[in-house]
Image 1 (cartoon, rainbow, N blue to C red):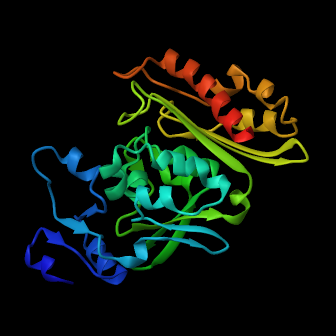
Image 2 (cartoon, rainbow, N blue to C red):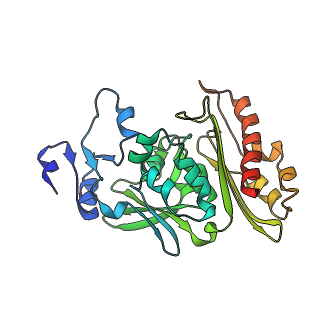
Length: 281
């Protein structure tokens, strides 16, 4: 490791091997972009910090039997990448994660590991059938993103593991997608509700649908009833297949300082329709 190790509460490893050796020891707080870690620390950042900023293997986007996005890839890099239309919702979300400074520093892996119900990146990734690759000194393992996120601030990361890669299968790179977010203002805001929709269309009909809603449940969720209703619909009739009952069946919103549960339920219906309409357009 570099000279960062001379400070007992800070390490900046140069390789995954070194990083995993630290994580195996336990007690480290992992730092990628820091846009969640620092604000959540209050006046003092407790515990030794493991800074992953120098590990090249954790950054970048590769097209290889699908899409591989390094966990330390910034939102700005995702927004500016040349990606299929199916990833448009993810890129739209990337442009709404805070301001430009946050987008340059913040990472996709940090957004997932923070496990906020309002994490902008989660609905688009659910619509893309994303998986995560977790690595430890004993080897890698893969989980669907829906199984990685267990609840607010809770993930399936085990002691000694790091989130290394977000994986999007080749089958999910077909179709086109859209992301719609509702907040108290248009930018620099935590969402009241948000929706990502990805639709596959052939011969004027919807042949595949993935729709996910965030900020309306402990974790973002797919809407199976809406997806089933959309499949088989013509482009002209697809919006008529989206019903309030189907949207709200999978949601369990709460009242908080941003909105009531009832408002979230009503907003989710409208946002699903808007996202579907944009993906159809």
